[in-house]
Image (cartoon, rainbow, N blue to C red; front, side, top):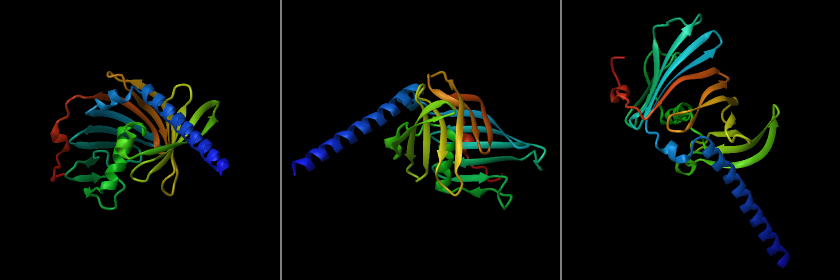
Length: 237
């Protein structure tokens, strides 16, 4: 009996030590990107980016505030039929709409709540470890791996919308350099090539590789006023 009690005690100690190590990795990562407090003070964000994919160039203009979030998209390139059109995705607490080039009907359609959750995940580019408990995200350590001569902590993240990802944190810089999505029929990835320190001290990814092209963020503004009209739904559009 004492043998089993002792074994249980050893297992409990090991699990506690393991949990401490995972939290140590996560906290060092959060400090590396500017600290939780600095990110908490970000109330609005406006960014511009360019995506190069095949023979197309997609220019994005993104607005995020407590009033909602909006992504404006303009397509350029030899394969684009109508270069004058501006597509968008709009999510607010009251309504959500989208107008995208791959829709069957060439018209504005309502967006589902799940679509807005995924859009927020994509547009904010916020680390999954920031405010994880508040968001309902959970994470666990998987392994320490070497890829392309770099050593990474591999962590498994499960979001409250049931999306799961494997996140690779550089063991030297504690920055996220790779994310692999394990959800859906097709695995996707995102490679973070470079970061930029913004005026409030947070580190923000400005260049990424994805299956949908190379993304370069050309401009980021934080905590600057965003016109509330940006989130109004124009029925005439």
